Each structure stands twice: as C-alpha cells, then as structure tokens.
Image 1 (cartoon, one colour):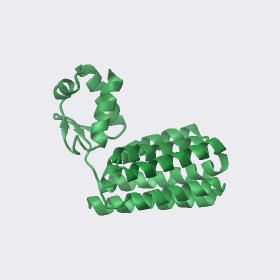
Image 2 (tube, rainbow, N blue to C red):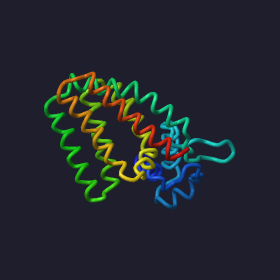
Image 3 (cartoon, helix red, strand yellow):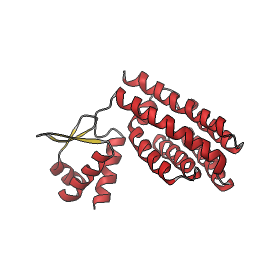
Length: 207
C-alpha cells in the first residue's frame, strides 16, 4: 500500500497535476487514492526525503515549489556525476548495453512522431539509467537515479518549449555516438552540453 501511494503521489507531482506549492492533505489523498492514511503518510515522508515534498510547520505537507536555485544546484551536481558516468560508460559498456541505448533512442523518436510526450520522457529516463548501469558503479547509479527524479518536473516544463525534442534527441545521439566510439572525453563533453542545454532551457522558462 505504501508503494502504491508513493508511486501515485509521485506521478502526480512529477506531471505537475499536484502543483508546486500546493498543500497535500492526507485525508483528501486517502479518499482520492482509495488508500489508508498510514501509507499516505509514509509515502509523503519518502517524497520529502527525495526533495519533492516539504513539511511546513503547523500547516502540513506541501509540494516543493519550483525554484531557479534548485535547478542550478541540480545542474551542478549532474554535471559532476553525469559527465563521469558518460566517461565510464564509454569505457565499460557492453555491446548489448550500447545496442539497448540505441534501441531506446529509436523508440523515443517514434514516440515523438506519435506525439506521445509521457512515453518520450520515460524512454529518455531509461536511456540515462541504462547509461548509468553501463558505467559499472552502483553508488554513482543510485546518485543519478535520485537526480533524475528531482529533475523530472523541470523536464516537463522544458519540453513545453516548441520543438525542444529536436536538440534533446540530437544531444542523446551525440552521447551514444561517443560511447560507441569508446571515446570517454567526447562522451563526457557531450553529457556536459546536454545538461547545460537543459539548464538554459529551464532558466528561460521559469525566470
């Protein structure tokens, strides 16, 4: 029950259906989701640890507001960790993992052609997670998984920019191309450009 509550609430937050700054009433959530208050309470505590919910004294739980400072902080941490991830993946990825990343990007292109935005987002996340797996560093993979979740609300906003999917697709292909060529420096540099592009788009959207 706790996992169901966690996944449902997280999904609504990430997709901005629970708006940034919106208060989350445990009783209302329990009625809406058809779950008891205990799993709702535990799920909100878990989401607080992940940085998606914050507790306001004497008021309760609130969806964490979006902020430029947060996205800049996330970007700084992603730059350090994801550039290293791409570098390691270029050295350690198996042929099967490289083929898997290529297949995900092909599916992503197909999702874009069909206008399936949520599917496009899921495939993009899977691409990044497979790259982190290919880096062969479990601690790094766990860090990146948390960072991706913290970035998802901002990703939704960034993709509202007209034709944003075009540079994103190109950036992913450049990262994969460097990994396929076993070029760690090029992979790291491509990852840097991808993250900085994301940061610049978000800055334009929320400032």
